[in-house]
Figure 1 (cartoon, rainbow, N blue to C red):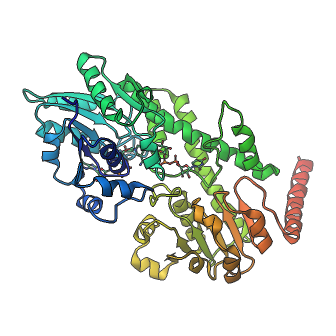
Figure 2 (tube, rainbow, N blue to C red):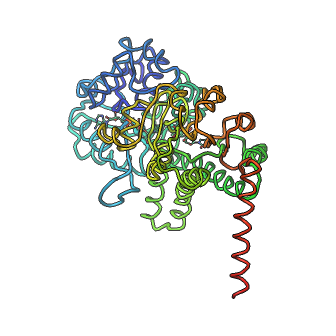
Length: 489
Ligand code: NAD
Ligand code: UDX
């Protein structure tokens, strides 16, 4: 007898969808049903156009859907049948009440626990896959136990997900590790063994690690906090580079060659985005404060603050470089997703930059290869009416977007941006034409040669002779003023 025959996953989002698709692919002996209360999302999973873009995902869904992979809004039968239930619902930052703006809102996780308690019979393994505050499993256990009917038993496990968007299929098929937290009891161990058995269909046993539930929950928050911290650290150094003439790419290379540090996640940028980093660090900050660990809270808060600083600096730099005014100027935004190979815009730094430019009175031409037009308008709070009057136009073609604009602002590191014909764009733009590379991926020497004024993160701009004279003149004035202030003291 196999330990798990049927799996139900609640939440058909960026985690539930790809995770269950890979699970179905790797475990043909298990029936996987992904349920969601959103009819739209489920219909999309059952259609030719999936609700999320993830390289390699469509092929897997097409291969498994209707065989051992099902998407449904009919939650009750799927829950009743399942031996193992994943909870993969969203856990957003609270927008109201106690902990507003920081604590994780667990209402969706709680409603899943209540539904499971209401409808399930027999013994079930309930797996917390959503990212949750440490000790959340205790609340799930509490709700389940308080509502348990005779003959029903539950084991609650923590199994956080470490996939990154844009590389989800690869991260899921070849994970660095799979983390399972559970109880020390005999039943707890049996449940851990059952979930491990599922993963062992494709993950080597030594990569599946077991630990206590609270360590497992905290490890997820800690991993995201460490990853984001590296980005904020290199971004902090990028500001020093811009002020001194050092180049952050060279510094990152030098740092990354230290085998204790390693080269990954040292790419200075316009700032990190995505649905996880900010939310999970805010959550960690809130937990630390609740535990009276104020220094710990302040330490991690700084990772977020540095990210805000980076986004602000980039926005301000665009305005400054364009002669301190962008009112009525047309600016092209290349890339709106929070990173390449995804259509997701949650917390995308592009939203921040675009809003900043709009507030300064600019008109925006936006192009992204994967983000839907409606999503961009929603993120920028532009209604159809407002769009007519104000200044956001969305393009399907990067060359059309660039036409007649003063500047290109790169917000996402899409590979295809590197190979565009920038001479063609330059010829169709107003002069002087600017490039602001928020991702440090373009060939700046080639762009400068074409005639662009190029600015990027973590490097002083390569100014033309006239601009250098102006800067020297301005800096001289600053020096004179401070010298006089000093003399007067
Ligand atoms: P998402 O918003 O894309 O998907 C969540 C889905 O859950 C939605 O489709 C929503 O309709 C559904 N849902 C919510 N409450 C429900 C309920 N009571 N019943 C049925 N369906 C319900 O979220 P996501 O990005 O997949 O993230 C899910 C969790 O995984 C979060 O806790 C997140 O922090 C974590 N996580 C996300 C990523 C990522 O890259 N996105 C990576 C690792 C972990
Ligand atoms: C992250 C974690 O990597 C993943 O393990 C977790 O499960 C979910 O959160 P994700 O947000 O999808 O994944 O993407 P990630 O690759 O981590 O990038 C997050 C943001 O940081 C993006 O905006 C990216 O462009 C930015 N980034 C990343 C940098 O600015 N510099 C880097 O060196 C790396």
